[in-house]
Length: 341
Image (cartoon, rainbow, N blue to C red; front, side, top):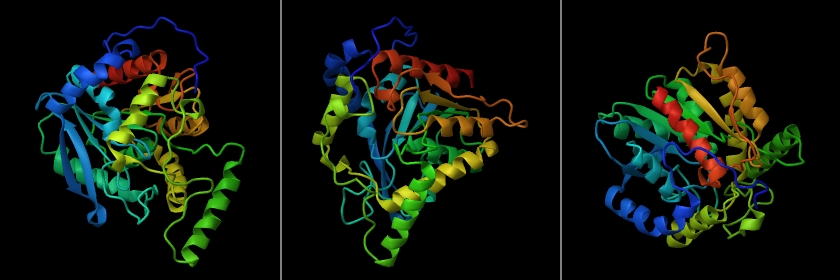
């Protein structure tokens, strides 16, 4: 996704890593930080699925961020982001969702992005919070979510009101972009395929047009305008081939459609201060669904909640991997929001 936006001046009050620094910094300072600071652990989730997570504890009594990635992502992808947050004094915990990243896969074909029940993601998160985060003495606990992680995080916050002091949902998945196919037709088609899959009793097959992991060029990507950050995260799949994941299964798709609906329907149950960051050029998830979520979130008894997303004009889906003119303003908004809570 080559950028259509010229270089513009923007504030960088937190001195976040810039692209001009990143090429040298990633293999030097950030790699040294990762080796010295990050510890990797495992936890048993629903149905005894092994979940793997990374932690960077900077200060045992200081503030902490729990980071939830999107579909197919691993904590290995977020090295620069975790480094930047730790430099601000936050400890960071990042768990790989079941069926992806460094965590256990759920099907024989290890490339299939699958989940049996979307609520398993939420239950896994609760187990993680109770067993890993709650025993700590962090002064504040914040939730930062990206894409599918935003759907998981919102469903979690609807049920558990006291685990986090504030939450930021970046490009949250409240509606999947099916392109030219209207959502109602896509929903009916996916449900029909799901029924057929159940009837023939076979491993959940790929959603239409999806398949095993394959490297894709920067020019075809919908995720970021930054060639450098795109290249770094794609190269991580070579260093950690176990994190490679193909497309979603039809069961994942059906479960996710239902989860998006629930996330919006019960958004008003969220009591934790929650901010949505919206990527203005997002082609992966729907801006309209994010606006519906915010309207439901900020009803008359919940007026402390923002009624609209914070728009990052022109940004692609991956705000945390975007070029500086989008990434730094997005992270500045998130850090400012956490600082206020």
